[in-house]
Image (cartoon, rainbow, N blue to C red; front, side, top):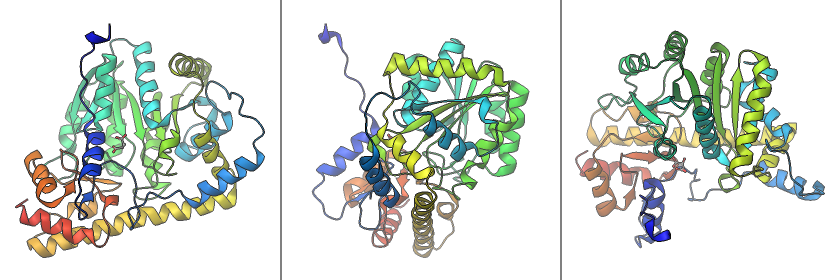
Length: 394
Ligand code: LMR
């Protein structure tokens, strides 16, 4: 029967990783997949992660199954990290998942269970895998305007106009911070407007927060998520620990389902556990245990925050350096948006042909929609990228 299988399209981001590996040029620059890299090009294991792993190794006396929703202690620390005290803990059902993608997948399945006719509104653009998973599950996707290709900021009027067409039973997928792939984000007043529209339409928000701590700070990056969760009757949150703890391959994420009425929490919790059981049974534990160990230990937590801040600031520094270099070379401020964007990514706002030209002629790898991973740069490659952008006539 396998002969009936059809070739599936390769994931564009992951295909780029392979192309980069195969490129023999030693001047090549990887601005593709969203992993943090330090100035030497290494994705380091964070100090607190190493220390937590050592603690776990020394103290762990069993590898027996955890619960279907993972270790409740992981849920507690993550609910606290993402939501602070915005919502009563009793109103939050939570389950560990294999990475942020696992949380996104489980969220979409829960939506489909709750309302087979639900439409999911996604920003144009959004992380391509959002759209891919929705398509795979056969969930109708509606895209709402998001990126303004003139200003490289948010087309806020377009966004509001489009979100007003959502209705009760629909879901609006929002990026909690550090929008992927554009780097353009809503300000606080704009989030308030979005909340107003959500309340007016009755649509359910789903927040994907995969980069908490990479934008304006650990607490700052959670502000919008907390505001939304506190304001609406129901909300889903998919959070990832891949980036802010640097534990990509451990597959550590969590899905939260929040109801304003705590009598719904039991049902929500049962549904999350059921979905885990159907898809993979127990979620991976090692990464979740690292995160729990770090967040429950004052010293480890403090050290993690220090290192995370270093990571965040290094990306901000690269943003400013790139914007300044481009200003110098172009004699204009048209690349100023790069310093305004937040998180790991910025959409340069050029054509796929130009992206291809940068790859072929300069060995610079970015995603076809011109998304650049800012963390893929360093002080030496910033001028190389800036010159290539200007020389290509972008
Ligand atoms: C990205 O957007 O590059 C990351 O989230 C990695 C991935 O899985 O696509």
